[in-house]
Length: 123
Image: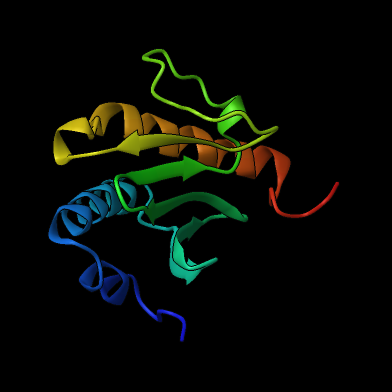
């Protein structure tokens, strides 16, 4: 059975995971109030002209990721990953959350989607 809301997703997590997901979610909603929030691919996904960000809880961390992460400017070197497009920040506790950097990533990700279109569509 798939999760229908982000609230249900958070409610099923361990408390430390839920706290991280809830705080990152607030940053996304503040930075992109026009974005659509849903559960896709078994995780919270945020879309504006296609998906731009996701939050995924794992056993020992929570990833906050971006579809066009390789194109995002990251002065602090927070983004990780080795794929062709996606990058993520791995969070182990709420102290790892960088509100300012994450807000910048969100704005860049949306701008890239507006310029390049839906990242899940093949060109």
